[in-house]
Image (cartoon, rainbow, N blue to C red; front, top):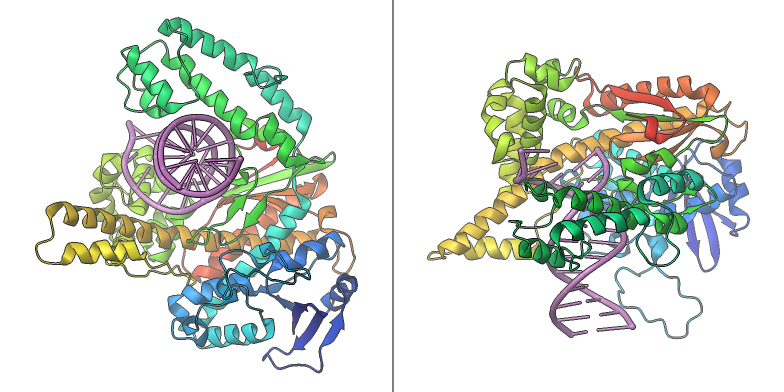
Amino acid sequence: MYVVLTRSTRGITALRLDDAGSPLGESDSLTETELPAFVARLERERPRWVWDDSTRWYPALLAAGVRVERCVDLRLSHQILRGSELTATSALANAPLGPWDAATPLAEKPRPEGALFDFDPDPVADAPTDPVAEFALQREAVATAAEPGRIGLLLAAESAGGLIACEMKSAGLPVRAEVHERLLADLLGERPRGFERPARLEALLDRMRTILGTHDVNPDSPAELLKALRRSGLQAASTRSWELEQIDHPVIAPLLEYKKLSRLQNANGWNWLDTWVADGRFRPDYVPGGAATGRWGASGGGALQLPKQVRGAVVADPGWKLVVADAAQLEPRVLSALSADRRMAEAGRGDLYEGIVASGAVKTRAEAKVAMLGAMYGATAGDGGRLMPALTRAFPQAIALVEQAARTGERGGIVSTRLGRSSPLPGEEWRELQEGASVPGASEGLRGAARSQSRGWGRFTRNFIVQGTAAEWALCWMAGLRGRLWNLGGADGGGGRLADRPHLVFFLHDEVIVHTPAELADSVVAELRSAASEAGRLIFGALPVEFPITTAVVDDYGQAK
DNA sequence: ATGCATCGCGCG
DNA sequence: AAAGCGCGCGATGCAT
């Protein structure tokens, strides 16, 4: 059963549909206040809730202690169906752009409140939405798709991701402010009172000034710093750390340390703590499907860039543990599964990179890693490029797949992930340059620029199929895990809030953190493994590709790895 | 004063 | 070792 929820100025309506999408009687009318109890009651029948946007419905339900098992997030689903090659002939994909194509989550649209003059800069995106009609269009698009099973799985996984994003924000990542402050004090010195630099940074700056024999050094401005270094005779092309590392000069060591610590202070210092951590929790906004490949984005506090330096401040509650898990070498494994390259699958029996060494393609594990990254990113120079021929000889099937994706992109074409998320088309400027360079008599400079741009898009599509399919694996892993964790916490219908049971608190592309009562930690580990195997089977069927995960049961995130 | 591009660096 | 993919964010410096 589906239950479609619609919110309008007149209130909320709930329309039940059978599995074929036909209405089951009349719709119910509800107020906002009545909604949580209504959802909780109907949830016992395990319906799939259909709504425009999880971020518009689910936070309030979670706040009221109501968790739902599954949903259709129409906004996320629409985004996929609109662009997928698998549904390109559907009515949905061929309709003019409308409110479901809005760039921002529907929740972020300011709602007009009795304004006499409703200034509306975007009539298309702000047009009223009809979830019932949209759901029918989406079902039709899936039913008529080339691979309904794949796109259907993708939409289910994406929608589950929408729920998980809300749940993780609701639960929050446990961060102990006093631990974070101690870390900062150890590295930077005591918190400065005003706007002066912390003691450690000031000391480093003093050393740099002494070494260079001038007071005129401002390491916070790349342009100024470069000038100062040049005045002292250093041959620096930029102030990037890895370039500075190449230079042999006494000022480099304190400078690099300054840059490292200054970065910590700016990105995750006291100001970060004050702004983003409250009540012992860090609650960023996760953005499912935020990247074109389907990877998640996040906004607020740089959630996906939490530096290793401060992970020790992520601490489980008393009596609880953090279970940190990540998929080992996910992207190369995805490539071997995508291409059904049995030799590469064989190499992935244990440590994939060691397996590649054993295959004889390269000499060392480090080379294997660089070569695989090069294959997936499209390296042309450096070690990655140099090792490509050997890798191609060892795994022709896998390499042919990414090469083909690259060629498609270079022509301006579309590629798709295993489950059917398709790459965007290059923009207008891209096409104009390609066309401009293809006319007879185009200058060599123009043709070179077009070639470079073409290869650039090829690198994007090459990586898209791997990164995007890896994102699908991660979504399926997490979606399966979510259900398993809920069931671990007690019999269904036994009540209890999400945060009273083992629950997800962090997600980073191929890594998750589960916050769990200590006595359930071992069970959580088992479920993480089961969910990983299940994700592989769901997406790739019976292919003999393994997706091992590493796990660590810890008190704080800093102890993992 | 505010917006935008660039640099640089954190994460995968 | 620093090339090749995907992101977010803060500081700076220039343009409006």
